[in-house]
Amino acid sequence: MHLAEPTMNGGFRVHSVDSVRQPSSHVRPAMCLLHSCAMTARPHTRALAQHHRRDSMRCRAAVFFCLLVGALCVACAPPAPPEAEKVSATTAGLADSDLHDYQLQALETRVQQMPDGPERDYFSGMLAARSGRFGDAVAQLNRALPHLRESAPKRAAMALEAMATAYRADNRYGDAARAYTDLSDHFADQLDHFPADDAALAQILRETPAQAISWHGPVKLKMSNNPIGSRDAEIVVNGVRAPWLLDTGANQSVVSLRLIFTLCRRMVGTRARGVSSRVSASSKILR
Image (cartoon, rainbow, N blue to C red; front, side, top):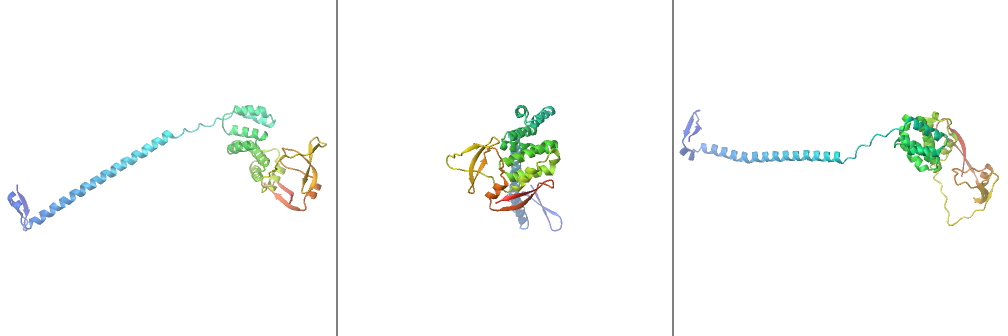
């Protein structure tokens, strides 16, 4: 085996194997440097290759994990709800007639046969409002209202009026005032008669807190029949004894002006404007 060594004049000097064993002084450093670089490069190259392999394995693992998570999400996701089935125009028309004629039993039968959807929510909510179940009425009509605004403005108007009445019955005058405002601004022309007085009263009482009555122990009231066939009871209010009509279903109490002056020391005049330019009412707030 021979080794070619470059010379200073551009030629080569050939060494035998024996001479390679003892290289000259100027050849030995070059050979040592070459050997050192080779020894240094090989571990670095191996480490770099191992690093790339680890990165590649991590990337494959990450991709596999994402695919696995995606597959699990698709497999575990609930199925998309089926599109709500619409109530036929004939059934809806008959339900509108039942509602207009106050045929609540017939309306309830039709509602039970309707598929789930905004039409059923509307008729069920109107039935609840007419039956005095005001909480159910508000919940169901609120669900139906977004659909009715576009598809059935006449029903949207009736729904808003029923919701306002339900709010007033529950002493939620602020909510009632907002419902009347919505009705006046968007659907007032859909009603045969806009409830201006009710809307004005809701505006007057919009900041009034819900009223409640509490007592301790049994209460006995002496009652008598009045000329219109209702029941009266003698009740003391602000130290003034007067007959009051008992009506457990009344939403507001109405008293005579003379009794107002007797009960109240002063009157504060206030004007309620509201819902829109269509409604303007003046009232006296008693304090």
